[in-house]
Length: 166
Image 1: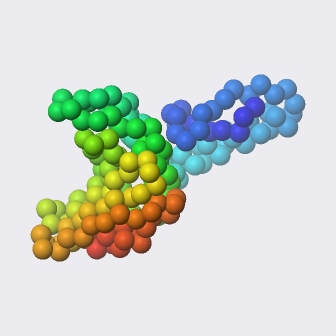
Image 2: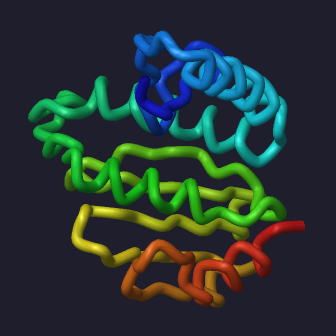
């Protein structure tokens, strides 16, 4: 048996494999995995992560070919999706749930919007760089840049979400 989980019967971050073990220990581990899966799926953090990951995979399925938007968009790459998935895993519980946005240049974006003058977008292209742009309360207060993404959310992004949320 492989130690892996599928939450709510959907693919999340690991594939679930069938228990092929015959020992009592193997069966006990399988029962433990089922119990853990149920508990994790009811968790707010894991439930949100699972839902966002599922949405990300659906977007990847829809946007992984050239011209997916009818306007010559580049395909979303597997590397960009994996990087975006790492971002989802790193999101703190207090952070509002973003909208996932496929971008025509092949990047995967996350957008938080709290009105026309309170917007933050972060983008991933699969090169361990997070690119961000925000409007912080008025069109004159814009901030943008790029930071290394090493599986923790850059401080500029954390601060940006804190500044735009009501």
